Length: 64
Image (cartoon, rainbow, N blue to C red; front, side, top):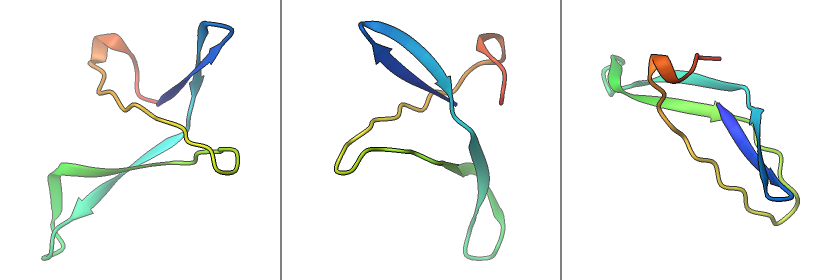
């Protein structure tokens, strides 16, 4: 996953470590259509940061 920083009008990508975890239904079965995405976000006090999540095709990038 990447975070894009805009510094002096230029975009700079920063890699963010993330984890994808399964979601379970009421019977304890793994759902194949839902996942939890977890990552740490460091923000200043009372600030707001927006993250955009995008699904990449294999030819667009690699998993990290």
